[in-house]
Image 1 (cartoon, rainbow, N blue to C red):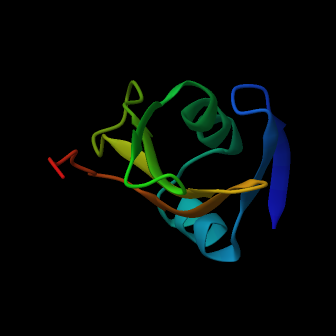
Image 2 (image 1 turned 90 degrees about the vertical axis):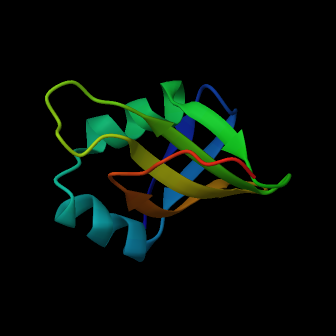
Length: 88
């Protein structure tokens, strides 16, 4: 599991093994994932489960989205492309 300290959220960000595999499959760089977490739009499903998403220039598969769980750390469960924001 890879991790870093988020300035935006003030807690550790951890990527699961599944998220790391999806990152590789979707050609997302470590810098892109950090930018996504630090600057992307946050949509909360509930207090613990969020989507963080944004577009990246030069990609044809936008929106890029991280499904995260926020507790003591922010855990990135998976990374998606072609994501669509929908009404709850």
